[in-house]
Length: 282
Image 1: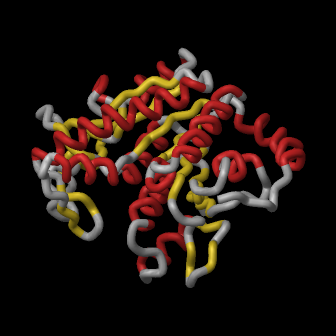
Image 2: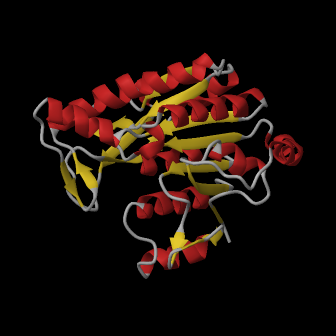
């Protein structure tokens, strides 16, 4: 999907003050959905995050991989179960999650970024105790965890040494049990722990829509109200809730954008108009 509104020369001119503003800041990019399935879009995301890194922005990628987990589970004759749209994770599914997220998907993203000179390194929440979790409490989803701690110093050390961390969202509890973690939900605590200037969700829709219309700018207070009255629903809820939690923890701004738009990440960050929804604190 292309966006004809922006001319290349206009984008370059408009980008300079943003480049100066965000140099040495940290961005957390949550990467998932249809953006991970199209070869051209996967290459563009790799290019975009590499460019951000090259101009002096510290970039951390947190990725999902639900469709591939479902596909591999099916091939292994493991039934995929969902509760209110969230994956139920038994031990067999947890093993597939670990294999797919920390293995094939993570290393494919790393490979693509490194093709462009991005110096990516793939890690999971298990490595160096990066993501500590407890069992998800709101409903029984099996071995699904919610984040209670992030080893930020581990990631900051990688960033300091010039690497671009790519994180597979699985975590470990105090007893060493491995849990699946929703990538949308994991991205918020990671961004908060790193003191990120921006948390960006690459999604399959234009952004937050209210009554069918895209909302370019959304306050923390209004976002909470829209969730409460059902105007924000379905798969957008965990993204917005994670965004609100991240803002409360000090993340400066959260963006929800359509990753199917070519170079969506650059257009959202380096242009005044942007292309999706930005959520800000009051």
